[in-house]
Image (cartoon, rainbow, N blue to C red; front, side, top):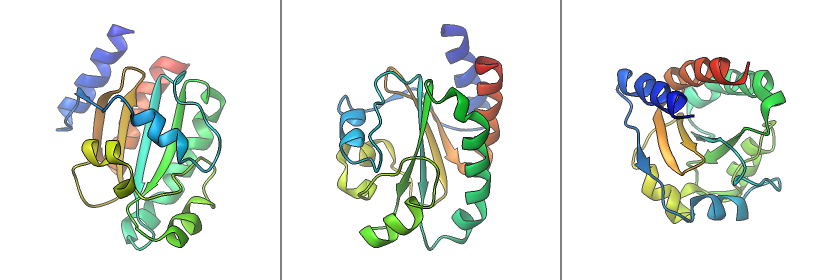
Length: 159
């Protein structure tokens, strides 16, 4: 386990991504209460937060990639959860995007969840954050750059 975390941290640090920041203790509880589908995060090795926005052209471009990633790794859903987090404030916008995704989404914007505001200091989308079972932020960054890194880590660990 420590070897994997070392590899993951190294991969993210080489790409210029900040890592090893501890998320607030109530992060998973706050997320679970607001998910579109009942999902327990406590038994997951990784929680991947995908920050997007309905009106963002880059998010629209990235959507097929994140859906394909989820489809590829879905058989390992006991080890990770991918969650869509909207940067929009309107619940209609959140539902219109989230309901079309094959993975859970937050029913409220990240602005309503204090623990997410603390870990996602960046603005701009699409972004991916990966949090481990100990609530350590293992990587964050632009979704198009992060997803291949997460894919490589999952390939080593899950196959």
